[in-house]
Amino acid sequence: MDKQIIFMKAALQQAAIAFENGEVPIGAIVVFKGKIIARAYNQVEQLKDATAHAEMIAMTSAMQFVGGKYLKDCTVYTTLEPCVMCAGAIHHAGINNIVYGAKDPSSGFVSKTNNLFSKKSQIRSGVLEKECAELLQAFFKKKREES
Image 1 (cartoon, one colour):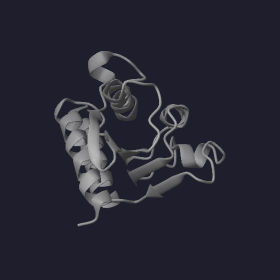
Image 2 (cartoon, rainbow, N blue to C red):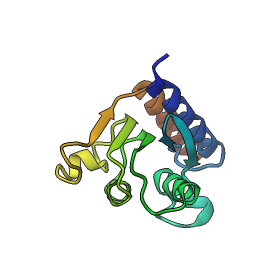
Image 3 (cartoon, rainbow, N blue to C red):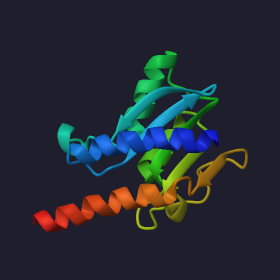
Image 4 (tube, rainbow, N blue to C red):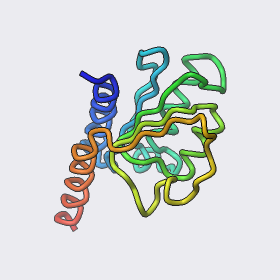
């Protein structure tokens, strides 16, 4: 099985935890040398913190793991296209590899900026896109039904 699919499944597991906790179901992991060094899910509601996105929490954890503020040679896997805030943090952490599942045309960094990452950066979209999108759709359907 393709490693990108294996890693995205790990991010989806994190997104499922977010779903169970009433958070927008987005999960992220950070991979270094083929191993997951950090896992996280959205905790915006739980922490009452608009910056508590899965990618931000995963990167903070990964930085603690490596003992520094740069995550060179790491890859971020996230179930939804990162927002501009998260993409900026990914850039400042020195990460040049981003893999995401579902696209976010309204808030995703690809539609908002096209010059944040260098030409050496590798950005791959659509990995398990259907599964990632279906989890988000199920969450928002549930929220509408509860209102």
